[in-house]
Image (tube, one colour):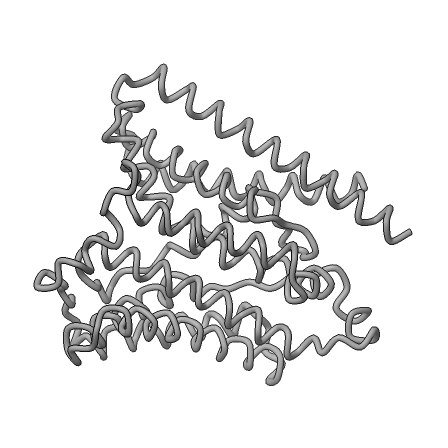
Amino acid sequence: MAEQIQGKRLNSKATQTLLAFSSLILLIIIFTIASKNFMTPSNLITILLMTAVNGILAVGITFIIITGGIDLSVGTVMTFSSVMAGVFITMLGLPIAVGIIGAILAGAFCGFINGISIAKLGLPPFIATLGMMNVTKGLNLIVSGTKPIYFSDIPAFGQIAIKPIFGIPLGVVIFFAAAGLAAFILSKTVIGRYTFAIGSNEEAARLSGINTGAWKIAIYSMSGGFFGIAGIVMASRLSSAQPALGAGYEMDAIAAAVIGGASLSGGEGGILGTVIGAFIITVLTNGLRILSVPQEWQLVVTGIIVISAVYLDIVRRKVK
């Protein structure tokens, strides 16, 4: 029975990933035909850089969604990490490596607090992470003094996102490395197995001896670390930590994971699908921008896609 369930899960994941990949190819074909500027080398680099940040965020939130949870603090935690990088590196004068590690740990700490709120205090993930979103939004402004923190005097930090590695920006390489690490964790480690177990049936997992509360805290903390990595890439790309930045990133990250096959009901999802979903969001946004579609309509289209993806997930579960 367990092997049959696992087989169905793998088949479902493969089907969803194939559908997402087909949709990505279709979008690329449409925008290539619609605009000669879409497939230019400079625009392709732009797409890769845009996907890097959202992709890392989406990879992090995939773990949370698979557990059946949600995280609305994605964007502001990312910004908090970038602000803390600014504090460590520019204000305290710490080495870049130390500042980067500190910023990632700051993101992980925010995730840890989310995990504690959910697993120990019993708060719904929506409420706990909504509170963290407001806390970090305020802290970003307080710590930075409401002003951007610039890294212009530290050229090496600015190279983290844009330095070319065989023609590919380093930020993109970091994204793919983060995705590879996440895929390994999700498929080959205990925390990955327990992520699926909690999302599939948390009560059954608890009764089988899994300390679901402790593992939820670990999962949210790990995801916060990924958000911290995204904050470093974002700050490097902008050569500054922008304290007001972050709002809206959570929706793109959630959309990428859901489009890629992660179920908001929990128990299903994969990193490859999430990566493809992140590219779909970026290609769509970039293509509409090239076609001079107003930003408000871009938001409408993205919203429709998210609703459609969730609806298809519901239909797919009913068919099972």
